[in-house]
Image (tube, rainbow, N blue to C red; front, side, top):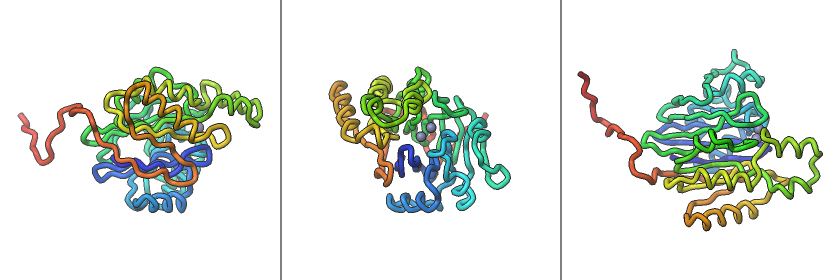
Length: 276
Ligand SMILES: [Zn+2]
Ligand SMILES: [Zn+2]
């Protein structure tokens, strides 16, 4: 599976996923022109994107959704709560409602959605699973990584997970107290320390790639997150590919392959099922 973060953070989120001929975008925090441009920079074509999945209605995740859907004719997948809290015009777009804590399909991809704790109507984190069982988790905008989310994102081959802020930088920074309190609450964003603690719990034997996402521009720094993740890997005796997602340019292309043994029996292509 190919995953390309096109932009990540409070100025706009967008992630490209592709496997077995199915391409989707998760979140639409960039406008159509910028999304197309950044996709081209990583060698992919927006015309091939079959669907857009929105995790929640905050501006940095949904701002470009309706324009992308109209311009490129892609359906928008989102929860009922996200739809109702958004200004998406149902008459003008093809909207597909999914429920959290269920699995739905887009082309060859299975998408497992799980509700998260965040100050939005019905926010989701996702595991995107390809036909061969490769699993990639994506979760940002978490006030708290509760057991349900940790469980949901365990056993992934790739993990794109929020490390939003350094707690001291946030405390000492210039944000108004009300905003600091919101970010630190159980419905805000994950601190670096909380992120590392959660990643430690989610790290399974199959994990090959960890990319930390949605870093705060004011209250975090790539070098802090890189150091923390490197120490986490050392403590656990693992060598993983590490990415730190960028806000204003694509982070690159991650190619994530299933490392573990076959998780489930997969029908060889071309074989026929005998019907009795
Ligand atoms: Zn966000
Ligand atoms: Zn949010």
